[in-house]
Image 1: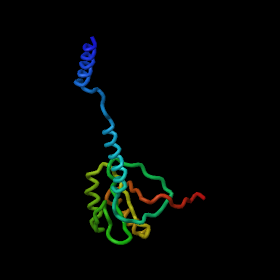
Image 2: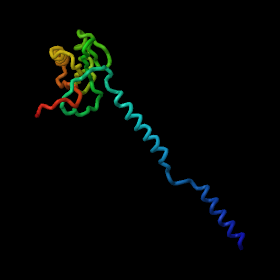
Image 3: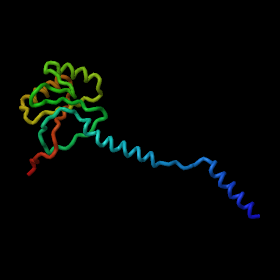
Length: 150
């Protein structure tokens, strides 16, 4: 009688081992997702346009993000204009922007100008952007500037 009980218990254990496990182990999935999150958090600031400028500081609010990659024109204190990451001679800026405008859905363009650039130069570039067909020009600045409300 005692031997029969042992065999039945062994049979039950054997059946449990052969059945597939119905639970999903999500721990490796969560680990991978956390690693990807950290990678994207570190990489996201590096995806901004790489032209070093000393942007003026203002108290303006941030502009809402767009679904497309933002189109930027940078005006450094010295040197040629930069369209995204490519240096562009002033005479070719309008034609290159018109070519880019045909491929984009958004008519918005971001203008980044160094704080040391004279106002007249920034207005000349804005006129060129307008001539290229861009009517929604966003002036990019750094946050934390002085407030003019007292």
